Image (cartoon, rainbow, N blue to C red; front, side, top):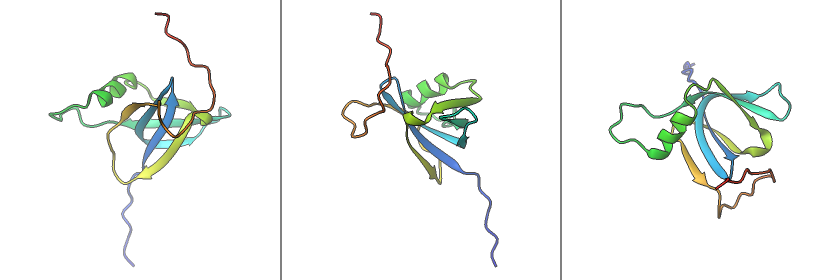
Length: 111
């Protein structure tokens, strides 16, 4: 019998945050002890040594810089996929999307 290679899982997490859909990649996701939340740990972003840097991924990299663990409300999660390899993290505007977020208050700009 052939031995299976043990590989670390990679998860793609899509969730709503302040009127936008975040797509991030992480190595650890589990249900939190805080009721109604999932925990996301070990975020994965592209290598900094790449010649071309995607501005949306760079924005996420700086936003999650220094974050050990995120607690995301379950009702904000759109989808969690286990994938074979890491993709590009991005932020998309949720206007015109077919997925409607659970109603939550969105802070208005004071401008």
